[in-house]
Length: 170
Ligand code: ADP
Ligand code: MG
Image (cartoon, rainbow, N blue to C red; front, side, top):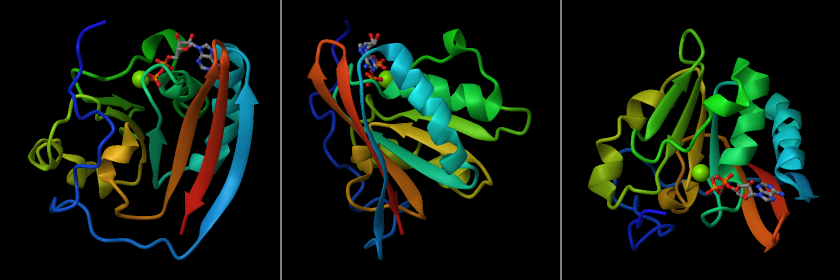
């Protein structure tokens, strides 16, 4: 595996122009699931898709290999009929677009190293669209989000075991 940035997972966006301070007025637990295989996680992604209709910002949080991209495969299969093999972490391209009018975006902030990097990604533009925006390493937004969104947290419990917690903010 290639070496990633040393600050992976740390919030970067505190002073970025693209985010505004947001204190969630409510936080609702939508689902919590322990999965025991990648297939189970993909299926859970398919189930969750109905909660992620556009416009929707989805922050996927958890360490490398915790299952973020695997869940996205299920979400994209359901929302945009994307074959699983077409879904990979956009670690270098940063943003992948799916659907005729770009109705789903898959973003990976793993290699984003500072607020300036984040600001030059064009997320401002994406966030204004009627789209579902799936952001891996969503924790790099810090506690600040721009609109109602769903946060999905991944915990690596064992070799094939992951706890996936889904919350709606606002
Ligand atoms: P991330 O995007 O968080 O870095 P990936 O989804 O790319 O993680 O990778 C998860 C890895 O863990 C894959 O190799 C997958 O096959 C494996 N895995 C094993 N068990 C599970 C599970 N229950 N859910 C998701 N992935 C799993
Ligand atoms: Mg990934």
